[in-house]
Amino acid sequence: DGVNNQIVAFHPLGGGARAITLRGDGKRRVASIAGLAAGADALYLSVPACGCIARVSRDGALLDTFGHGALAQPGPIAVDRHGRVFVADALDRTLKLFVQGRLARTWPAPVLGLERIEDLRIAEDRMALAGGASARAVLLRILEPAP
Image (cartoon, rainbow, N blue to C red; front, side, top):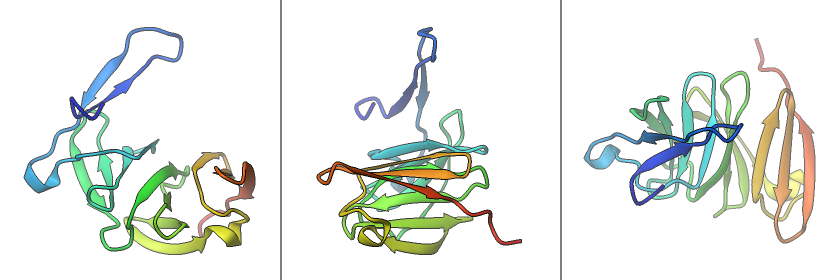
């Protein structure tokens, strides 16, 4: 909810909704959200206004941001069970991997079999990528992190 600067969480069985007000100050305010993913430790928001990822506690407190300078137009985002953050950058048509807030790897969408990445989801050790105009989906296996 961009007007009220909050995330509204709906109960999966249709119960009442819960509003999580995003809290920050001045420059550290989350002004827009293009994508949201739930990690084990926090919520991760892709924020085009700052070209970054915001890590937010489940009560709405802004914990930190990362990806400044590495992301131009962050969009769909997913977090794997190891806390690695994958985000699609619409401007340069890439998938970017962040580990502990640092850019670790970049894949151009065509290398992944898509013209552009419109959405992505992670379940266990699999990532599904969807390309909009091509009406194509790609399923990838995510490797375990190096020890």
